[in-house]
Length: 142
Image (cartoon, rainbow, N blue to C red; front, side):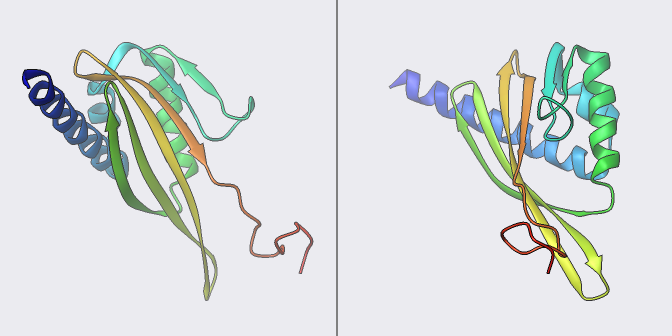
C-alpha cells in the first residue's frame, strides 16, 4: 500500500509542476520556465526541421522556448488536460488565432514531459496540422 501512496504523491507533485509550467508558458516567463528544467534538459519543438527543431542543454532549450513563444505569440493559449504516468507527463493545449475579421482557427497539440529530480528533463511537443482557412480538407484552395 505504501507504494501507491508514494506514487499518488509523486503524480500530484508532477501535475502541479506541469500546471505551473503551463502558467509560466502562457505568461511568457522564461526565467520561471527555466527554473523547472534540469541542467541537461532537451526540448523537441513542434515546428522546424526534423520535423521539429531539437534543443539540447539548458542554454539551447532557453533559446528554443523563446523562439516558440514568439512563434505562437499571435494566438490565445488554452490549457487542456494533464496526465501523469510514473516519470512521464502529458499536457494538452491549443492556440486560437485570428485568420480574418470573422474567422478564427485553432491549433491543437500536446507535450510529453519526462521528469527527473522534481524537474523537467525533456519536453517533446506535438502539433496537429490543419488546412489553412483558404484551403479545403484536400489541401486545395477554395
